[in-house]
Length: 403
Image: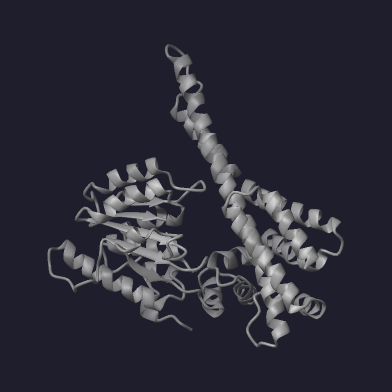
């Protein structure tokens, strides 16, 4: 087990399987406390900009949020119990601004507004913290707006950026060069299983299974362990490779994958969309009477149209994310086939589908398996370039059938 008892208390208990990162961040919190009190601190321990990188599911945003809570903590290095820790974790702390992209990108106008807010001094905490999840979604204009703030940061402001890697495709070199990088790794299955069983109360056998098939993605493991529909969708996805017997199966499989991702997106956003509309109508005076009602109604309708536009963008992102997760599962299947064909003893991504993997390994050549894997990866790339999902997935399914 790669955890240490003293590192897994308070807000740090949520940062699974990252002992080195937690040590670095706790040292920074101690230095930040000294700086806030005007006392000398170890050189380089604390800086104004941090970049959290790591593979999907490694807990980039969780680590960043825990760090933000520890910086504001009034009882220690992230006790998890004080008002500051609780409000940061809940997303309601006055001095911590969390930006979660709702669409496919973060706009320059949104970033300019954020930069203006970051210039203010903290009101209740020791630091003003700006946490940007998925900072790889920054547009070029938004990156430039952020760069100005990172180059000349206010004295008591800390920027926390999260991205898959520090590669220029994810984070511009100029921003990266001004950040201290915290590299997270994929948590081991036993660490994930322990968290699911002890913290979430999931039956140990189910926790162990979910951890073994999640690819090191903590959130995915939790969902698989608690959501029977998520387990059914995964089984359907992993049934695709051996189900493409006839060419007509290509269109059936592609339609199923896209439809499932659309259903996921609707389920994830439906209740939220309606509550947002209702709150907006109420705020704009819907249902009122008397002088000015007509003007207020027109304003409310315009605001609702703008909200619906944002909701549509959020739904598109949710669908792409759900579809990408299915493609990751597919890629893992073909990787497992290559592992079996090579005679390697490496662990399978999908150990519960070992029989299907062995059957495929007996029927396919290594070359054809590799071509299938490349087709899945090409589909993922096409989706990032805004190719229509059904077109990209049908092209992939045709390549999988052809082999």
